[in-house]
Image 1 (cartoon, rainbow, N blue to C red):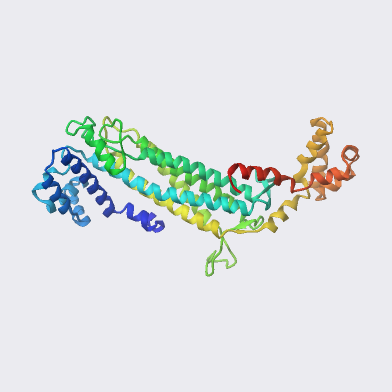
Image 2: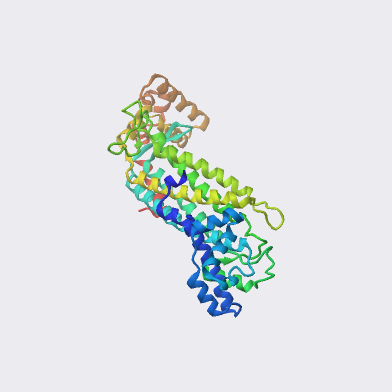
Length: 431
């Protein structure tokens, strides 16, 4: 099912063909190091590199009998290499091959995700600048609070994606470890120098200490960061979904020609992409939880993690890759309604400036308690009777004796908030 949403490059990385190709590359790297150390004849290395071919179908055929994928792979290589195949996998255990190869695949998939994260952040910042001065009502508890700008909201999201970029870089660094330490990690049959030189060839770091497997906290961190990325995308998506509600309609997913929103109601334009993001974010969290379960293995290892990882790691990288593609496309074509934003700002008849009035009274020497009571009395009247808040303030003798009409008018000036919003943008380097 996940393959339906996969990009070609991510599909290639996790394909059987590439998995076995990566296994072959790891085995060849070990042989090259052993040959350099005089433990494998140069002539044998050349034969192996020339003849080390495999067939996915043949490996599957052998595995159906052996019930062991690594043995099936090695058997297929041996069929093609001949007698020199005796040097392949010499001194290694299956996890030396599997874990080192998995690190290479995780790193390759991760670099694709990193590039798309960076592009998405840049797009959000570009759009933030476009809408920096576009006024929008800020909401807390879903209720109108004070004015913000749509650009400030976008800037906030861009900064959260930037934090995910930092976390993802750290997770990529922490997943990029290989091991060639043997059956229980004692290097009984291969010196640690072999592992160091093999990892250097492959662009990995040697695990400082391992048992039969690279410890699964590495992989759990990788999966947890993917889940955090998904949660941030869900957070953004939920906001877009709210803004697309008919009663709000401040922003909307692009609705393409020929698109249909409902099988029953031809008028419907539904936020299907952002709803899909919420569903995928749930999958990512579930997979991340499972990766935490993989950390605790019996003694030097068992394989309870193995079958799980073959599903959750490819699926999660596929999902995040797809989510970033869809969100980037969504924001490139997002429909924004500044006039509706302004209509919604005005919907409460000026009540959103109540704190401005409160603070102005306090600055004039009124106690906070008295000022709050004076402002709230007028605010509740404006709310209950749907009348203009500012007009009520003009008519309130307790307030008009302290604040002039000109002073009150200045409190209701939206443009005042732009001064410090521009400072936030400067702090973020969005100029």
